[in-house]
Image 1 (cartoon, rainbow, N blue to C red):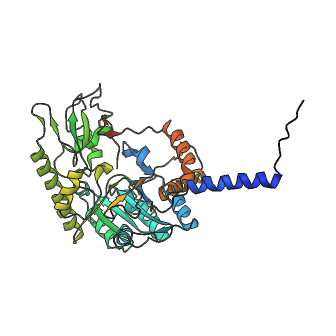
Image 2: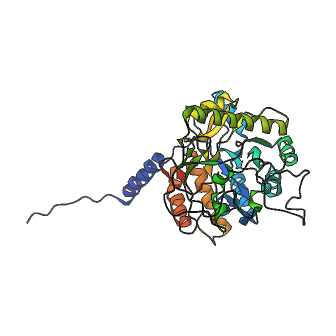
Length: 386
């Protein structure tokens, strides 16, 4: 019988091989160089007035925890404009740079988000839709006022001007009415009901002329109850479909979108008393045609990118990551919220070893916080608020 001797590597050699393998794996997962642009909407202790608040609102204490992650992790929060200038001039942005955005200009941005940001000395950009500027006047109480604090609704012109006058903040454009248009017939039994019609508000906003800042206070929708809900898409990107006349002609679509963008830019510019050139696309939906029309309307900086804000990407288009509360499902302590936020920052910057954690957290969250999407490939009647 012949015995084959199999050499056994010393323990240190095996450890060296394992270490080298781990180093190579980590290197393959380390593609840092992106600049995260983290997007919030509402920062509120009472977001129930928003039908989509469960997916777009963050508790003030969670927002504060996020900012502590940034500070303790050595992240440098810069303005949108600082990031764009660096990219346009071919300079690398500051190490561990991050940008903060707030879509929709909810009142709670004035009440809670901006005071918290001021305490940390961190800048942000807030995007307002002109049809949702509240008709009230004066500055309403912030969360530290003790009484008289309201959490529902949108900022008024005085609050937007005060925010824009603060060197930390910029108010930019989010279009006029943040509406969706019908692009196809109903695909199911979804109809407007007395209890559920507000979930379809972005489609209904297109049926509401004038100021819409207090739409949530209405008791009935602008269309009759039991009206079937059609397939929809973002109004600035899609051809509206009429049940009788069919799809909107391309020339009419372009004229409608261009007119909307010009009104939005002029309207917000009149409120702020300056030129407005930064546009955030509602729902982060944009097409090449819409982008060309926005440039024709005078905008020069945009959201809606699908990259990581790296060298070589269009410096006038920002790519963003949306932030939500209960990042790993309900009932989690603040340290879990902070850890998942840190992981999402890392992935957005290119540290891909965080992917398993972000995937697991998103999967767990989806069990209790489903999000309805409406995309060109599968336009369900639901809404993805942005």
